[in-house]
Image (cartoon, rainbow, N blue to C red; front, side, top):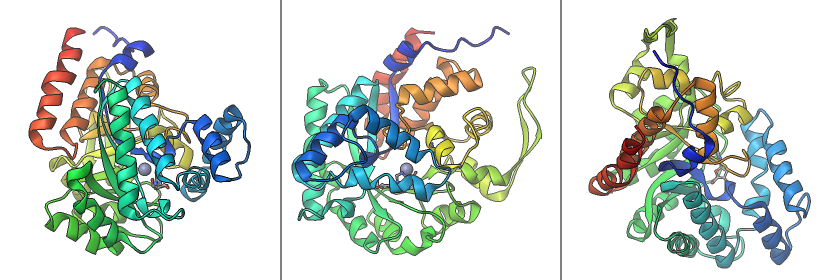
Length: 365
Ligand SMILES: O=c1[nH]cnc2c1ncn2[C@H]1C[C@H](O)[C@@H](CO)O1
Ligand SMILES: [Zn+2]
């Protein structure tokens, strides 16, 4: 068998990619933070954009989700006006389009952006204005939707779920919970997940990142989450019997929860670089995404926080292709997986797969 060709980075950049898990407040341009902080009178660790980029990456490289989350003080702190939110959202859409992303769901917690007097509804509108501008500036090469996140350690999760449903015609595709996972199990937010589902809405849930199987089980079996944010710890329910080798597939025994998730094709929003920073995985080369892909779970590749991880979709795929010897065929599989898992109506997902994604990869085969 010929060895797989690891795609050059420029090819990975031009490849159509789909991003389901990316935080608006985790993807600001460092220079924009410096500008916005000066306008808002927010004190930063440094006012030099290059030094600030290093500060975020090094501080987030903590081995702990809780300490990783502390760095958001300096992004959320400068996103408290409509103009700031619009600018950040516009640049987000532009940066993703330039990276070859054709569809993105961008999440953030509206409740964190009301310190300057905006209402929750005004926050959502300001972000949407920025996405609309960014999409236009990118010549319509990208489709973007919002996901509204409720913070686990705060109270108003039902209010955020109601906001997500109320704004479904104004660019919002779904609901999520984020923040520290240990001590805040998904069932604390059951009323919010129930509400979203009863309104025929969509929800994802950060689970299986800093806490293990019970969190994933609650997210899926109690809260009915359509997708899992990270979900890496599902690995705890999988026992490898024989590693893959010489063309033979991996042999593994799946527990009941892992089987359920694979059988039901529940998408895993995997974020390799972020997991290495928070200690959820030891390295890219040993990241469970390799095994889960071999076992054909519905795996997707994501950035989580481009600023804190100094990454992009191109970079995540470059790291994975190098670590696992993956070629464009795997990039296509993971991209189609993601597009199938999007919170977009079926006909729109189908069109993006058939008209934008598949033709590009077919041309290079
Ligand atoms: O990976 C994560 N796990 C849990 N919470 C996270 C992660 N990345 C970002 N957040 C938090 C910090 C942000 O302020 C919030 C909303 O985007 O979500
Ligand atoms: Zn996340």
